[in-house]
Image (tube, rainbow, N blue to C red; front, side, top):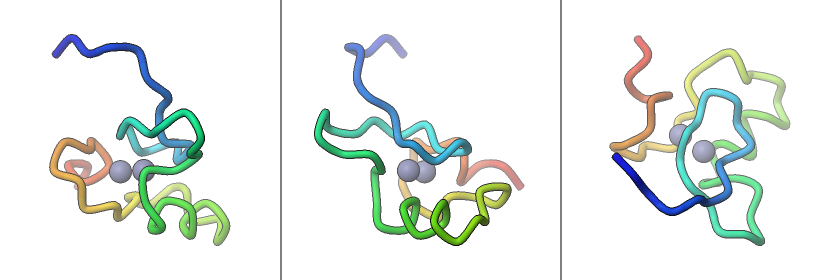
Length: 55
Ligand SMILES: [Zn+2]
Ligand SMILES: [Zn+2]
């Protein structure tokens, strides 16, 4: 899918777009990174997120 260039969630497993003034697409991603659980799914619950599809 071709989309306009946007910032991407700072969670390494998360591909969700975020606003320019945001680092994460969700509180779940922010907490995951802060907790050092970046190897797990981001848990943002966004349907388009690959982090949710990774079993
Ligand atoms: Zn995500
Ligand atoms: Zn995210």
